[in-house]
Image (cartoon, rainbow, N blue to C red; front, side, top):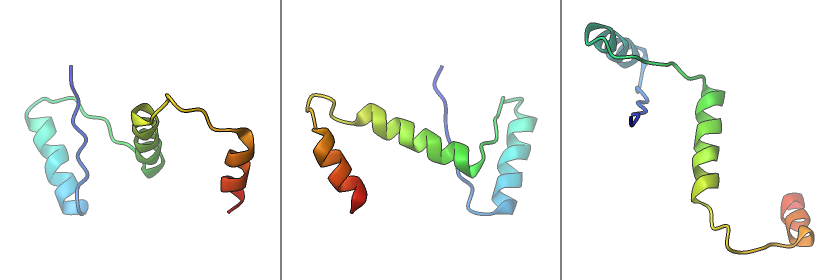
Length: 65
């Protein structure tokens, strides 16, 4: 089953979408900002190019700048 992530622009829109899901008997899960950021990071990690190796030296240099 596929999922949809919806980010309402304000509290009224959030309430409207929540009420709509309830009336349609659609399961929903509310995510915190941290959960949303972690999900975005996980998606970026999945989409990253894993075919190239980077040395530890380069990683340390980049992390310090």
